[in-house]
Length: 157
Image (tube, rainbow, N blue to C red):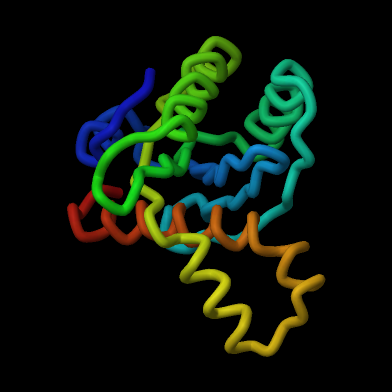
């Protein structure tokens, strides 16, 4: 089930359980994992994208290994609020993924997430090469933490 509002997403989740955050790029997928109580997002890994089936298989493995209760997928909405081709590709990815994983998938506005992460990494004086290795999983963590903070404000377990 694909959901676009966090309150609707929260009603589909069990009381406890981890969420998996995804920052979907054209070449990579950044991943972040929440704790069971859904308070803290931790950047996890960056997958190199290949064919959808292989990517979905790896996500299924992680889903099972960590007992994931739901997925948060960053939706790259343009700054003016419009949706471009990357939004459509993300929606298509979500539609295909929901056939593999019978779990709620929240599409979350990810505007400025990568920019915020890059700014933080620049402030930490990381080289361009080191930033490139971690930016996607850090962006996934940023996206997921935004959802966790919103869930906490809604007083959702």
